[in-house]
Length: 445
Image (cartoon, rainbow, N blue to C red; front, side, top):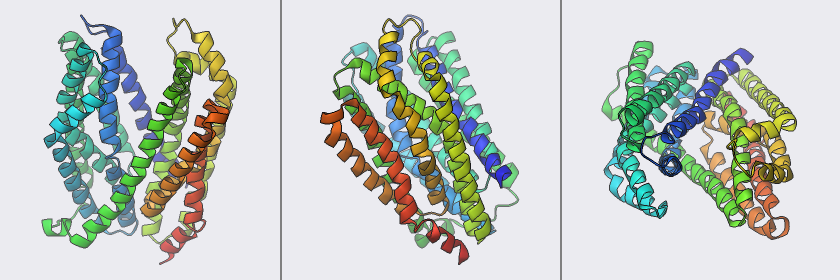
């Protein structure tokens, strides 16, 4: 069971790590585009990326909604059902992607207005970036569908290889278009288009080669079967609401930090949140393993393996959390310094401010060990309503703590609210599922 967990977790961890590495590489290239102010270009890139992150993050429901249903069909040995899941996921992804592309003007103009820097040069670069990269959106959403389906099929290696390939292509073409071709920030956006559509092409070929003989012939009428599509959209609508709450929490974390009126606190909170993100990249791998294996064992009606899987995923999550606690206790200043410009004149000031709040980054891995795995369990068991309701109540607690204690404990209120939000979410999912007995009963049917 440990081998199965690690077989699924490690490739997902590697895939996750490529995301910040690609961001660092893109920032490096943007700061060295000839004839431009590096700071302005990097700022424009960060805003452009934020716009697309918002689009993609709200489409991540497709990956989670697909993986649980596919894993259950795989565990039950229902070839026709997991074939239908692939086609349903791709149809929905294509419809959402085409809709986003067709609505690019209202989406783009609102985003550019809302995120305007007030600088004409910067705003023009953001506009060029948006209207070029929008061509990649259908491909990016289709990759969510492919990744969700492959996770459900217990395959984490193909998504990892494709993610690494896409990110390598993105960096390579960014350099080629922006530095060699002198296309500026628009070149980085065009690199995303080439890389993501290449990813779709490679993913399609690999699935046909690897799974072609296991997929069965289905009709379009079966793909769009009303009861099945209703179940698919019910699960995804719950996940959309859950994702919206999560985006709101992260957005107001940054807003509350900015509202403190102290640029050092804003900078420190941003960097400390990145330290939390480094932890989440690792633990997300075990959440993906939990969702794939939970769905598989529920579908196979294998209660004994389901219980062992859940127990060991929790153990691995706690081990990773303790490892991060040890690293942050011993070397947080060194890691913090790496994330700040080495020539920064206020590094000493930032370290002094960070020292006041570092305890939260040390506590939060323990608080989040259970929630990450619980998310994976709920996805695999298709308990999307529990995910939705627990997220809503956790978000309510977050805002109550944030605005109820900020006047009393200042910046600590932001971290108290965020840490509580993560911890409460896991606790609620545990009790809303009758201490997981509801999921065990599902596997006994």
